[in-house]
Length: 321
Image (cartoon, rainbow, N blue to C red; front, top):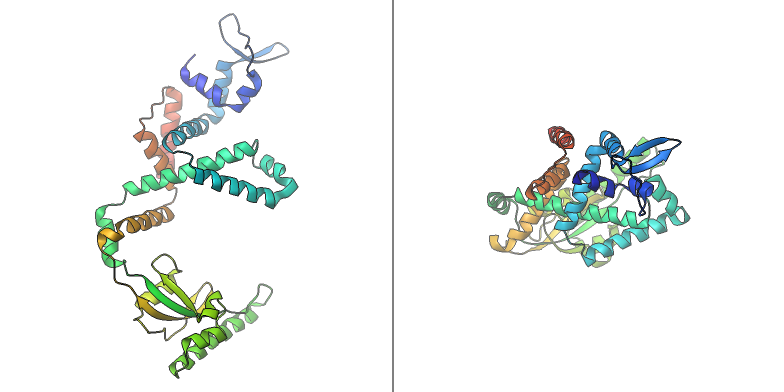
């Protein structure tokens, strides 16, 4: 029997269930029996072919990636802690229905769930490693020249719309217009000499209001883009003359300080991380390319000719999509 046949049978839960750990009966030609039913017999060769015909490609990929990810990436203490935390959250969420949740998602047990989560974390590591190979020094230098800034310190006043889901469209529009009018009123008071800190305490609906709207220092990627762009454009001690709209409401932003831009060598690692995360976020199905890269890197060889053809066809199809 081919090694590939033995391997697929070993990883198949169905086969383990049917053959168990005891002695497996054999036919005269040496074929091992999986089951017998009223004179009907199915051998491991027949069953393997059945599995291959119906689930071969995906089962093969799952088996390869399971072995590969566990070989390349260590199961760290931090990973275990995160997995345990996720499982605990699911248990708390579903309570007595937790087993039903597992069954509905075709997960055999809590242990199997933890294995799935572990594979998910390791798959993310593979994706990051793959993305890192696509980032060049030129990419990093370009980002540094165009985007890198020193940490910004700012305060803000957040005016929220009082619109609710049960309002009509007209009511929502009126609430939005009222919030915008209030934000403009605050800016007028600033123009007339009112203190930013006092107005933040009076008007702002953000948790920073009690501290005069102080947000501390931040850099790119830590604020929503509209807020970030407006803060970057300001000079120190300058505030926005028009309300800045974000998903949270209308902001009046005061830039209170900005540190010097770091040197390229100091910023290089952070820039690379940013570019990696941007690439992952903006590349559809990057996991397909990442796992294919990892398999090739580890010299994958598929000896079953039929499965090899199916695998190559599947991967070409996935990449073209």
